[in-house]
Length: 315
Image 1 (spheres, helix red, strand yellow):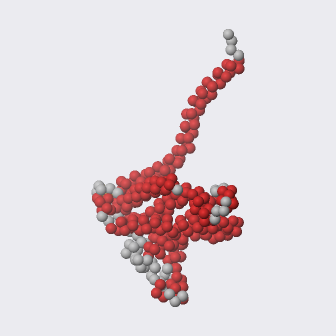
Image 2 (cartoon, helix red, strand yellow):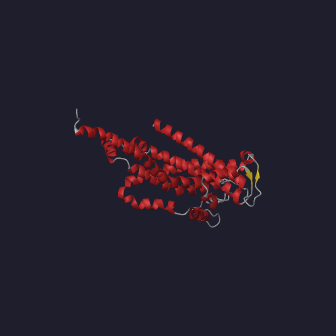
Image 3 (cartoon, rainbow, N blue to C red):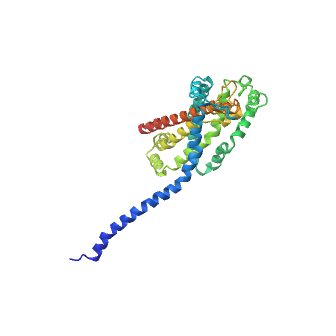
């Protein structure tokens, strides 16, 4: 008995399409590999190779010049574990990270909420608030170094003019004030970035949700805590992670304004590594500091992701 032609076609089509899929898969994998190859190559050259090289150099006693490198094993790591300056710089990095979370993020969130409520009239304010982030860190460092100048700086001049002579200080020369003075400038520069981040999160919220809450009699305070803040959970988690990791790797403003001084009071891990390599010419020990920074950043990133994810599930 002969089968109808359309039945034969229906039987043949799946087999043909299956063969086409099997034939197409290798070509798709090849295309994916070709497109991924440049990115993988860049990561290998600029990330993986420096990391492996830094780990290797941390096992050497070398000044970076000539071929007089001497293998010392883990002695650089043992020295690092007993290095008071390194632990002080790590503590300063931790203080900077806490200040970034406690100061930068709440102010940035408050500004974002206010600008979001302002509507179209906030365009000029957004530009003005965003200006510090557009400025060079070196220019900001030089600017505020002059602002903090104990003799000719406008900050002390304003305090003297207001009759607050007792508050005038050597802001960057006092070991008890130098870190706080530089952290204030760092927060001023970074707040606009998190403000834009929170604004982007608020703009993704449906307008109907806020309008429905207002119709139900909810106040702006209740809308913020019960609707807007839960909606920004992912954004807040990203901001916390960026603030912590950025604080652990920070370098430029501290180096320009204080150079890690006075007496190491504002020293960070990055500035300590820089001075060790380029001032003391201890490339092996400087690589040890850099490798320790990498391990610390990875550990803190993993812990931060875990903690913020747990917080998200509890809200």
